[in-house]
Length: 240
Image (cartoon, rainbow, N blue to C red):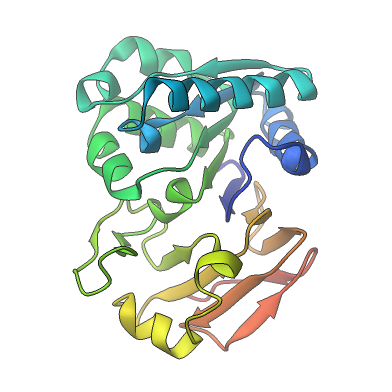
């Protein structure tokens, strides 16, 4: 039984997303997991110590707000990701959350490591798994290069091989026509491309086939299925 899986456009750990993050925790707890909120800050691993401390405190404040314990795992290198102690700490946590930063660095650091194996094992036994921004992008088979759009995509973690995510869609891509985004992002014909707006998520709950939009903005289906925009509470089944 896979746990709930969430792709978030932006807003990890913010008060505006607290109700949503609590629902992910509740899903994990219903599946017999411990009321623990695990932060995986790896995507920000190349940022300053001050910035990393900011993410740590932001996540802790959210966990405190939700009345659960938090674990901030300092996974910033592949050596960290292969540390068996860190892999053990996430065991049976209700929610594992990969936050934002550089998706390429996140994939390179986690791919083929003990930590990534542990994350997948826990998710497959009922832990909720969420990825925000870079953390959402990395779950595909390939990650586009937003800053170097002519550069080929790099390998992702391949949990959702047929789905590619553009986070922060309403902020960074509102000036690019949808048709241009499809070409620039090198999305193959057999993939589904979605844009997820800020403070918005799309989630597949444990035991469900459908994905549900949660948040104040939209999820945009851009390629691989009929083009459409989905708002809070609307559902979709990805057909590839």
